[in-house]
Length: 235
Ligand SMILES: [Zn+2]
Image (cartoon, rainbow, N blue to C red; front, side, top):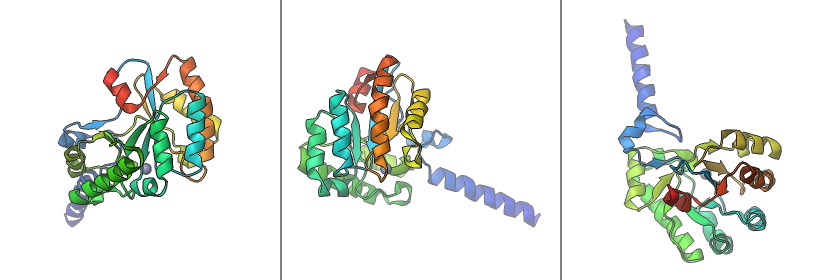
């Protein structure tokens, strides 16, 4: 009896934690957030969006921008406010090169553990850093690790941000070689996919090398590369 109650309590706590601290995956809690998360471009057209999180990095991000410029491929950069303040020139170049800037919070906090007001502050500070550097205010934002709860989603909505996650995780941070990253992404990509990558991290050179090979491979399969907002408008 006591054991049964203890087990029940554990289950209740686990379900409660799941409901409260929900990461970047599909799940039943999505109904409480009124389906406001955008995981794909929501189109059957053969378009895909490359997205790069956690930058800008003063060396790796320009190296990636060189590859994207060579291949004339647009992408979307979900940047951090603190890094944007440190490297405004890189933010300005991202915009100048025709890419989309997205808001990835100021300090890369796990938002399900943050108060709604802190979430709003994180987004607003990052907007200011991006606007100062590039003269644009992002329309899209992505919570770190995709982590969100209903209060997070409402805070994003109050700042007029579309909450964008991804459907294809390159897992590039795990350290696989470039060819393996390319194969993994190609295998998972569907029309309208949003692909998650990280060029700014230590080891991001491998991601950049993968992108150099991935873009022609996607085009050979009939995909057009778009920014998140341009691709979503096509839907
Ligand atoms: Zn991140």
